[in-house]
Structures are given as structure tokens and as C-alpha cells.
Length: 313
Image 1 (spheres, rainbow, N blue to C red):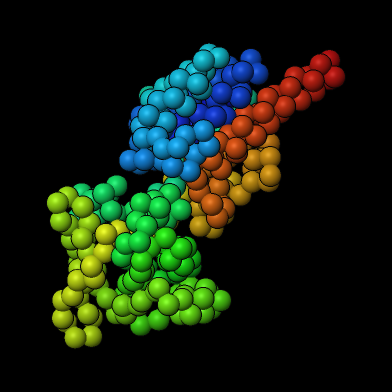
Image 2: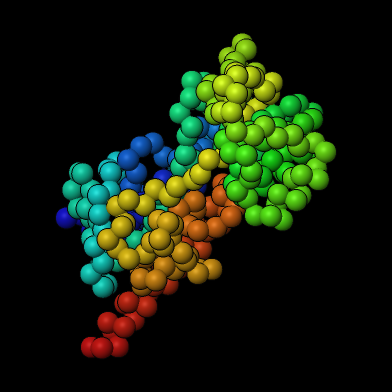
């Protein structure tokens, strides 16, 4: 079994920043991920809202963050985490490539947007299909966009997009929104927002490898229509990537991890950062801030463990 002071599960911006802070504090650190470092940044064509860069490609920012995170000796390893055991002052991380032992654990596995699974969605991701208005809305200034969904996120992001887009069409499969009434009222009063009801989305259409519209079938008439749009923002749900931690006791009923402001979970020595946390704003900048806090808190936790051992002797 490989032993470290800190094991970080997930190599997105939160996990990489946690590794930077923890290793800079002279802790032995292992970053584990089942894929390449950078997380969802690798799927982002351009990032324009991260301080220090007017615009930077997602993979380029991933590379810079990774190099920074290992400069003080942190290790990086590939492995799919299967489960975690809490044994008090020691945490055991079971992966498909062996086990790890750590004094502190930082969970940074992120979340993923639910897909509608229609033609064009996957192919046009990053070329008009988006799951984040805050991230990509600026690319569609003065253009027509569509939002698929009818819950809080869909309506909130639709309202946000009206600050940038020429028009926003919210396409919903039911005849009424599921969002909170206050959000519905704001949307209905907004002159830039249109609504398409009882719509079964069938395809994201394209022109020259870019989104051109959203094709749907009217569930009442059976007629097929296309909403012209340069951007298609999909909000049919988001789910945390927390399957390996179900038996650990840190998840809420929906699978999210609750922490305090210092990234502590309800189990001493286990922290969580980034999109896996239950929160509203999921951005590179917020994940980085949380990662710094968690890295420092892991150091403080391990120092307290060492002090308690000295005191009991």
C-alpha cells in the first residue's frame, strides 16, 4: 500500500490547487484521476473569466495549473477510485490499480451535466452547445440562443443570457415551468425571453459545424419545428460524481458533499472542493479558491494529529 500525507481525488482546478498548497507545506501528496489532469477545462475552447488571462484555451490552462501543482513534489497517478474507508486517523483509498493510505483526503471529483442524448449534442459541444451560460454566454453577444429545460437553472441562466444575447428561447417539454415562482415571474416579464411549450427536442442542428438551431416535435400536434439559434444551452440537470463515496457518510440525499467554509466535511480529515460540493457557482475561479483553503486545512489537520501524538506520550 502506498502511503501519503494527503491523497487528492480529482485533478481539476480545485484538486490541482489543493496539491500545490499541501505540497508547498512540505506534505507528501498524491493526485489521483482516472483521466488527464484539468478536468472539464479540457473541454472548454476558451476561458475568458479567469483572472490573469484575457482569454486562454482550456487545455492550456490545464497544463499550466498541472505544472504548478507538482513543482513542490506532488505525485500524479492514474486510477479509478472504487471506494474509501475511514479508519480514524488514516483513510484507505481503494482504486483499480492498488490501494493508498493517507492521513487526509481531499475529494475533488467534480460533477457532470446531464445530457439530452440527441444528435448534434455531443458533436457540437464547444461549438454552440454549452452547459454553462456564465462560462460561454459572452460568445453569443447580440445573437439568438436557445435554452433547453424548465427548472431553476434553465430559467436563471436564461435570464442571465438576456444581458448578452439578442433573444433567448426557453424550450420546455411540459406546459409550465418547474422553476421557483419568483424566477418564473422575472422570465415572463423579460421581453427578450420567448417560450416553447410541450416540446420534445430531437436534434441540435448545425451549419458549417456550428449550432444553427434546435429541432423539436410539438407533443400535442406532432408537428416538427426548428428554433433558429447560434447557441444551445442545455439545463436538464446536473449530478455529482460521488459514486465511490456512497458508503463513506459524507453525501447528502442527492449525492452532493456538504462542507463548511474551510472545506471540512462531517468526517475529520476529509475535505471536498470544487463542483462536487453543494453550491451555486461552479467556476474555475471558485474551485481554485476552495482548493487553496483545503490544501492549507489539510496541513493544519495533520499538524494537529502530530501534536496530539506528542501530547499523549
